[in-house]
Length: 205
Image 1 (cartoon, one colour):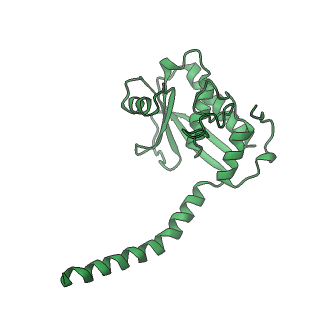
Image 2: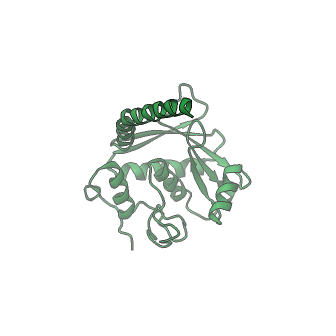
Image 3: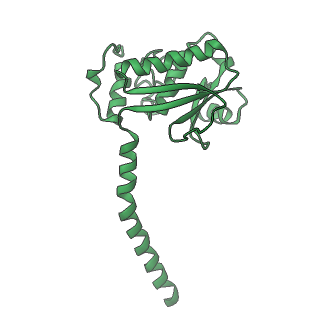
């Protein structure tokens, strides 16, 4: 017993010491993650249709416009060399039986139109194209770009209708197909900016 207690105490002291040193670094990293301006590059798979490409471009332009150029999404077609994983997002079309879509469907008990995932080495936006028929593709793209910027759904199990009418609301049927004042307020909470300085954004009804 005596032999075990000193290594245990030493381990605890080392962990506490590491936490004291690492915590400011982690805090500094998280703060740096949410600073303006934001620049990300969307790498689209080569076989995306022209209307899908146009929708992604339209979504990227709206984020640029409503933030007065503070958010920039560059668009490139794969393959590309020298991809920087810190700023890159892969954009791809998937089917409903894609593993991550199946998991999301079952977890949310809903039908997933798009998904932003960080499970891979490079984050990805996955569109379930066959489910977006008749729905604004650019709105789905804009919503997933919002997730890539750090925004979450405003609604949850305790407040299922909070944020209805906003872009980041979990259901597109009750959400907006454009960035709203609520989306910008939540964006500016993360990025330490004044949402009222941005223009042309509709209020949530």
